[in-house]
Every structure is written in structure tokens, then in C-alpha cells.
Length: 149
Image (tube, rainbow, N blue to C red; front, side, top):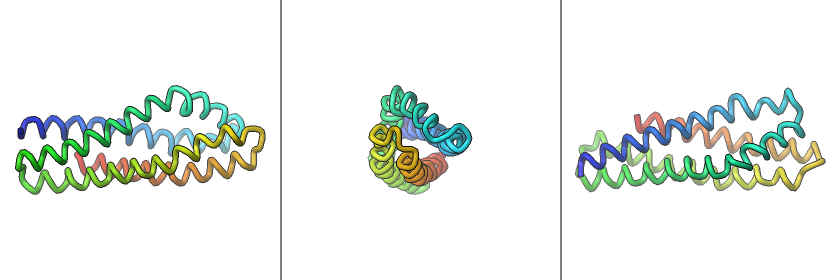
């Protein structure tokens, strides 16, 4: 069982690292671009990418990383691994739950862009709110990756 726990922790770390990287890309590079290209152009891009193929991509990556992290923490306990492994795995599981909860808050805000088309002020307010929740989510995902490492 210790070997299974190791591989689950490894898989959770890889998946969470990919997820954190994708979130950082969005927070550092993509979302700030709206100030350069304009809110309506950014919204069109976001709907074509994040709200297009990105829904499946981010859904599988985010959900998969969270589930792998929860499974890794459970497997570490079942295998009776030492606290130096179980405690970080448990913290990672808690962070996975938290970043999943922030996604439940951020995603509907992002999807609301569709209803605000043609209203730059409404789009700006929505994307500012989304940017806040995205930053919180990215921070939790980076912390989760760090703990799993």
C-alpha cells in the first residue's frame, strides 16, 4: 500500500503543478491583457478559449488534481505512513477542497460574461470580480503544489 500511496502523491503533485501553472498563466498573463486589448476583445477571447475548450480542460485538470490529492492523503493514512508524509498530504487535501470551493465561486462569474455582452461596464465589473477569485484560487493551488512537493 505504501507504493500505491507514493504513486498517488506523485500523480497528485504533477496534476496540481500543471493546474497551478495554468492558473498562474491566467492570472499573470491572460487577465491583465484585458487592459491592453480592451474589455470586449478580452471577453471574446475568454469565451472562445476558457469558456470553450477550456471548460473541459480546466474541469478535468482541476477535478482530477483535487481527487488525486484527496486519494493520496487517504492512501498515506491507510498505508500508515509517517507523519512527515501524512501531515503534508492532509494539508494538501484541505487546500484541494478550498481551491475547488473557490472554483465554485469563480466559474459562474466567468460564465456570466455571456449575459453582459455589449455592456463594457458590466463586463469590467464581472472580470474584476473574476480576477479576484482567480487570484485566490491560484494562490491556493500554488500553495497546494508547494505542500505536495
